[in-house]
Length: 258
Image (cartoon, rainbow, N blue to C red; front, side):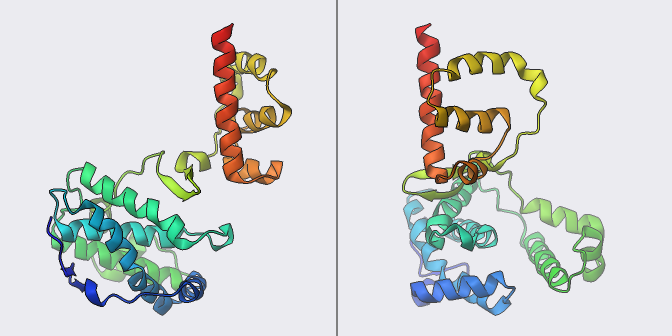
Protein backbone atom coordinates (compact mmCIF):
# COMPACT_ATOMS: atom_id res chain seq x y z
CA UNK A 1 0.00 0.00 0.00
CA UNK A 2 1.68 3.19 -1.20
CA UNK A 3 1.66 6.40 0.77
CA UNK A 4 -0.68 8.82 -0.96
CA UNK A 5 -1.24 12.56 -0.72
CA UNK A 6 -4.86 12.11 -1.83
CA UNK A 7 -6.94 9.41 -0.16
CA UNK A 8 -10.64 8.86 -0.88
CA UNK A 9 -10.64 12.22 -2.66
CA UNK A 10 -9.22 13.97 0.43
CA UNK A 11 -6.06 16.02 0.08
CA UNK A 12 -4.36 14.88 3.26
CA UNK A 13 -1.70 17.57 3.05
CA UNK A 14 -4.40 20.21 3.43
CA UNK A 15 -6.28 18.67 6.36
CA UNK A 16 -6.87 21.20 9.17
CA UNK A 17 -5.35 20.75 12.61
CA UNK A 18 -7.69 21.60 15.49
CA UNK A 19 -6.44 22.90 18.81
CA UNK A 20 -7.49 21.23 22.06
CA UNK A 21 -9.85 24.12 22.75
CA UNK A 22 -11.46 23.84 19.30
CA UNK A 23 -11.93 20.09 19.76
CA UNK A 24 -13.64 20.57 23.11
CA UNK A 25 -15.88 23.32 21.78
CA UNK A 26 -16.91 21.37 18.68
CA UNK A 27 -17.62 18.11 20.52
CA UNK A 28 -20.01 19.96 22.84
CA UNK A 29 -21.78 21.59 19.90
CA UNK A 30 -22.13 18.39 17.86
CA UNK A 31 -23.51 16.54 20.88
CA UNK A 32 -26.22 19.22 20.91
CA UNK A 33 -27.08 18.37 17.29
CA UNK A 34 -25.02 21.00 15.46
CA UNK A 35 -24.47 19.41 12.02
CA UNK A 36 -21.90 21.99 10.93
CA UNK A 37 -19.85 21.40 14.08
CA UNK A 38 -20.06 17.64 13.49
CA UNK A 39 -18.73 17.94 9.95
CA UNK A 40 -15.93 20.30 11.02
CA UNK A 41 -15.00 17.97 13.90
CA UNK A 42 -14.84 14.93 11.59
CA UNK A 43 -12.63 16.70 9.06
CA UNK A 44 -10.54 18.20 11.84
CA UNK A 45 -9.79 14.75 13.25
CA UNK A 46 -8.95 13.03 9.96
CA UNK A 47 -5.27 13.67 10.70
CA UNK A 48 -5.69 11.30 13.65
CA UNK A 49 -7.05 8.66 11.26
CA UNK A 50 -4.21 9.30 8.83
CA UNK A 51 -1.56 8.93 11.53
CA UNK A 52 -2.99 5.51 12.45
CA UNK A 53 -3.46 4.41 8.84
CA UNK A 54 0.26 4.98 8.23
CA UNK A 55 0.98 2.06 10.56
CA UNK A 56 -0.51 -0.22 7.92
CA UNK A 57 1.33 1.07 4.82
CA UNK A 58 3.21 -2.23 4.60
CA UNK A 59 -0.01 -4.25 4.47
CA UNK A 60 -1.17 -5.49 1.10
CA UNK A 61 -4.36 -3.43 1.15
CA UNK A 62 -5.85 -0.50 -0.69
CA UNK A 63 -4.97 2.81 0.99
CA UNK A 64 -8.37 4.34 0.19
CA UNK A 65 -10.25 1.42 1.76
CA UNK A 66 -8.09 1.37 4.89
CA UNK A 67 -8.54 5.14 5.32
CA UNK A 68 -12.28 4.69 4.80
CA UNK A 69 -12.34 2.01 7.51
CA UNK A 70 -10.47 4.37 9.84
CA UNK A 71 -12.98 7.14 9.16
CA UNK A 72 -15.82 4.77 10.01
CA UNK A 73 -14.08 4.09 13.32
CA UNK A 74 -13.73 7.83 13.85
CA UNK A 75 -17.45 8.41 13.26
CA UNK A 76 -18.35 5.53 15.59
CA UNK A 77 -16.12 7.07 18.25
CA UNK A 78 -17.82 10.45 17.80
CA UNK A 79 -21.28 8.93 18.06
CA UNK A 80 -20.45 6.95 21.21
CA UNK A 81 -18.14 9.39 23.00
CA UNK A 82 -19.39 10.49 26.41
CA UNK A 83 -18.13 13.98 27.28
CA UNK A 84 -18.86 13.34 30.96
CA UNK A 85 -16.24 10.57 31.18
CA UNK A 86 -13.47 13.14 31.51
CA UNK A 87 -10.99 11.72 28.96
CA UNK A 88 -9.62 13.25 25.77
CA UNK A 89 -11.51 12.33 22.62
CA UNK A 90 -8.31 11.05 21.00
CA UNK A 91 -7.75 8.65 23.93
CA UNK A 92 -11.20 7.20 23.34
CA UNK A 93 -11.05 7.29 19.53
CA UNK A 94 -7.67 5.62 18.86
CA UNK A 95 -8.70 2.05 19.87
CA UNK A 96 -12.00 2.45 18.01
CA UNK A 97 -10.24 3.53 14.80
CA UNK A 98 -7.59 0.83 15.08
CA UNK A 99 -10.25 -1.77 15.80
CA UNK A 100 -12.18 -0.82 12.67
CA UNK A 101 -9.03 -0.94 10.50
CA UNK A 102 -7.92 -4.28 11.92
CA UNK A 103 -11.40 -5.73 11.47
CA UNK A 104 -11.36 -4.61 7.84
CA UNK A 105 -7.95 -6.22 7.24
CA UNK A 106 -8.90 -9.37 9.17
CA UNK A 107 -12.19 -9.90 7.35
CA UNK A 108 -10.54 -9.85 3.95
CA UNK A 109 -11.50 -6.42 2.71
CA UNK A 110 -15.10 -6.63 3.86
CA UNK A 111 -15.74 -3.01 2.81
CA UNK A 112 -15.44 -3.83 -0.88
CA UNK A 113 -19.10 -3.56 -1.80
CA UNK A 114 -20.25 -1.89 -4.96
CA UNK A 115 -20.15 1.90 -5.08
CA UNK A 116 -23.90 2.08 -5.77
CA UNK A 117 -24.66 0.12 -2.59
CA UNK A 118 -22.27 2.28 -0.56
CA UNK A 119 -23.91 5.41 -1.98
CA UNK A 120 -27.34 4.05 -1.06
CA UNK A 121 -26.15 3.22 2.46
CA UNK A 122 -24.73 6.73 2.85
CA UNK A 123 -28.07 8.23 1.77
CA UNK A 124 -29.89 5.95 4.23
CA UNK A 125 -27.72 7.21 7.08
CA UNK A 126 -28.30 10.83 6.07
CA UNK A 127 -32.08 10.33 5.85
CA UNK A 128 -32.10 8.57 9.23
CA UNK A 129 -30.21 11.47 10.76
CA UNK A 130 -32.65 13.91 9.15
CA UNK A 131 -35.69 12.06 10.52
CA UNK A 132 -34.19 11.94 14.00
CA UNK A 133 -33.46 15.66 13.91
CA UNK A 134 -37.13 16.22 13.03
CA UNK A 135 -38.16 13.96 15.96
CA UNK A 136 -39.69 11.45 13.55
CA UNK A 137 -39.40 7.68 13.84
CA UNK A 138 -36.33 6.59 11.87
CA UNK A 139 -37.67 3.11 11.08
CA UNK A 140 -36.63 1.18 7.98
CA UNK A 141 -40.11 1.75 6.53
CA UNK A 142 -40.00 5.53 7.05
CA UNK A 143 -36.50 5.75 5.61
CA UNK A 144 -37.57 3.77 2.53
CA UNK A 145 -40.63 5.99 2.11
CA UNK A 146 -38.54 9.17 2.42
CA UNK A 147 -36.07 7.86 -0.18
CA UNK A 148 -38.83 6.45 -2.39
CA UNK A 149 -37.17 3.03 -2.57
CA UNK A 150 -38.14 -0.50 -1.50
CA UNK A 151 -37.67 -1.48 2.14
CA UNK A 152 -35.47 -4.43 1.13
CA UNK A 153 -33.12 -2.04 -0.68
CA UNK A 154 -32.57 -0.07 2.54
CA UNK A 155 -32.03 -3.27 4.53
CA UNK A 156 -29.57 -4.64 1.96
CA UNK A 157 -27.58 -1.41 1.88
CA UNK A 158 -27.27 -1.28 5.68
CA UNK A 159 -26.32 -4.96 5.89
CA UNK A 160 -23.59 -4.40 3.30
CA UNK A 161 -21.76 -1.85 5.45
CA UNK A 162 -22.34 -3.54 8.82
CA UNK A 163 -19.67 -5.53 10.64
CA UNK A 164 -20.02 -7.80 13.67
CA UNK A 165 -18.50 -6.29 16.82
CA UNK A 166 -16.30 -8.39 19.08
CA UNK A 167 -17.16 -8.53 22.78
CA UNK A 168 -13.48 -7.76 23.31
CA UNK A 169 -13.72 -4.49 21.35
CA UNK A 170 -12.17 -1.71 23.49
CA UNK A 171 -14.62 1.05 24.36
CA UNK A 172 -11.84 3.30 25.57
CA UNK A 173 -8.31 2.94 26.83
CA UNK A 174 -6.73 5.00 29.59
CA UNK A 175 -3.29 4.44 31.14
CA UNK A 176 -3.17 0.93 29.75
CA UNK A 177 -6.49 -0.11 31.32
CA UNK A 178 -8.89 -0.95 28.49
CA UNK A 179 -12.64 -0.92 29.04
CA UNK A 180 -14.05 -3.66 26.81
CA UNK A 181 -17.51 -3.95 25.31
CA UNK A 182 -18.18 -7.09 27.35
CA UNK A 183 -17.54 -5.07 30.54
CA UNK A 184 -20.61 -2.98 29.67
CA UNK A 185 -23.03 -5.85 29.06
CA UNK A 186 -25.55 -6.65 31.79
CA UNK A 187 -25.86 -10.34 32.69
CA UNK A 188 -29.53 -11.31 33.08
CA UNK A 189 -29.15 -15.09 33.27
CA UNK A 190 -30.89 -16.97 36.07
CA UNK A 191 -28.59 -17.43 39.08
CA UNK A 192 -30.47 -20.58 40.12
CA UNK A 193 -29.21 -22.36 37.01
CA UNK A 194 -25.58 -21.92 38.01
CA UNK A 195 -25.82 -22.36 41.80
CA UNK A 196 -23.08 -25.01 41.85
CA UNK A 197 -20.58 -22.56 40.35
CA UNK A 198 -21.62 -19.95 42.89
CA UNK A 199 -21.06 -22.34 45.80
CA UNK A 200 -17.53 -23.15 44.63
CA UNK A 201 -16.77 -19.50 43.98
CA UNK A 202 -18.21 -18.51 47.37
CA UNK A 203 -15.82 -20.84 49.19
CA UNK A 204 -12.81 -19.44 47.36
CA UNK A 205 -14.00 -15.87 47.88
CA UNK A 206 -13.93 -16.27 51.66
CA UNK A 207 -10.16 -15.95 51.48
CA UNK A 208 -10.30 -12.57 49.73
CA UNK A 209 -10.38 -9.10 51.25
CA UNK A 210 -13.83 -7.55 51.73
CA UNK A 211 -13.56 -5.07 48.86
CA UNK A 212 -12.41 -7.77 46.43
CA UNK A 213 -15.26 -10.02 47.54
CA UNK A 214 -17.78 -7.23 47.01
CA UNK A 215 -16.45 -6.49 43.52
CA UNK A 216 -16.65 -10.13 42.46
CA UNK A 217 -20.11 -10.50 44.03
CA UNK A 218 -21.44 -7.48 42.13
CA UNK A 219 -19.69 -8.52 38.92
CA UNK A 220 -20.52 -12.22 38.74
CA UNK A 221 -23.48 -12.73 41.08
CA UNK A 222 -25.45 -9.62 40.17
CA UNK A 223 -24.05 -9.26 36.65
CA UNK A 224 -23.15 -5.58 36.98
CA UNK A 225 -20.70 -3.80 34.68
CA UNK A 226 -17.36 -2.47 35.88
CA UNK A 227 -18.68 1.06 35.45
CA UNK A 228 -21.71 0.34 37.66
CA UNK A 229 -19.46 -1.25 40.28
CA UNK A 230 -17.07 1.72 40.28
CA UNK A 231 -19.99 4.04 41.05
CA UNK A 232 -21.27 1.80 43.85
CA UNK A 233 -17.89 1.11 45.47
CA UNK A 234 -16.56 4.63 44.98
CA UNK A 235 -13.41 3.90 42.99
CA UNK A 236 -12.46 4.29 39.33
CA UNK A 237 -13.32 1.72 36.66
CA UNK A 238 -9.59 1.11 36.16
CA UNK A 239 -9.20 0.22 39.86
CA UNK A 240 -12.22 -2.10 39.66
CA UNK A 241 -10.62 -3.82 36.66
CA UNK A 242 -7.30 -4.30 38.44
CA UNK A 243 -8.91 -5.58 41.66
CA UNK A 244 -11.15 -7.95 39.71
CA UNK A 245 -8.20 -9.45 37.85
CA UNK A 246 -6.16 -9.73 41.05
CA UNK A 247 -9.02 -11.41 42.91
CA UNK A 248 -9.61 -13.93 40.12
CA UNK A 249 -5.92 -14.77 40.06
CA UNK A 250 -5.95 -15.28 43.85
CA UNK A 251 -8.95 -17.60 43.57
CA UNK A 252 -7.21 -19.65 40.88
CA UNK A 253 -4.12 -19.97 43.05
CA UNK A 254 -6.22 -20.96 46.10
CA UNK A 255 -8.12 -23.60 44.13
CA UNK A 256 -4.91 -24.98 42.64
CA UNK A 257 -3.38 -25.23 46.12
CA UNK A 258 -6.29 -27.27 47.47
